[in-house]
Image (cartoon, rainbow, N blue to C red; front, top):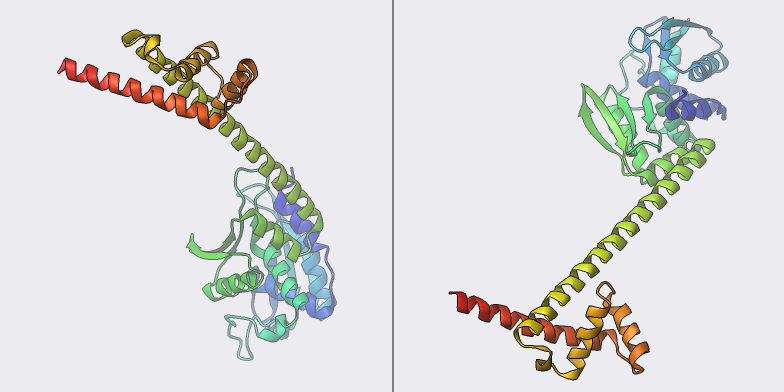
Length: 315
């Protein structure tokens, strides 16, 4: 079964922009997923469409000899695609702002590479293709991450993401730097930024379904909690009424309070609101919830004094 990450990469890899956008995308890929020397650039990926995209970018932009081979990944049995470019690779690496004129690695690309909105988005596409992954929204948690070797590059990518207010963060993990986003809404925003329209529709459909399901569960839990609270309150009122009847008798209570006791015993599991409506209908005069609550408060106070007097007699 194809993973959600693979589906997103397949969609992004099909993107073909203007030359400057393609250079920004290729720069991100080479900087984060390539081995190179003066004569060779090698990119390895498990995704066939990403491999094809890298092949086309290198051959079309730089008119260099590029080959694709494959081999078996002994760790997970997936096939690995190896893209190899041979020729004047030093010029390519300099043009992509991977190295400087002296052949030293550039810790960060120059601003002009990502000067426009389209170029910034293209660079983020290349970052995701080279070292990104995203959880399927059907799983229990939302998570998007990039594993990056170099700290400066990780911070650069993190800053770039946060230009779009994605609330990304960087941590050191397994000797690499993980740039990650955990908020569902922000992950959806990132997928929009990199132009993964089909992935966005799938992601948002699942997210909305999960949010609705969670809300329904919360409402059901609240309703159950309210039912349990009502039953506990009713049982306590009945207990207090029985205590008063047993110790003092019905005659001790005034007519309004006695009336409340009669209806509570007659309808032992109704809420206060429901009981007030029943009494209003059967008695023929308005009994408000507030007025009924006042009567039960009086019952509670009498029962409390009885319990306190019983304690004094015991001790």
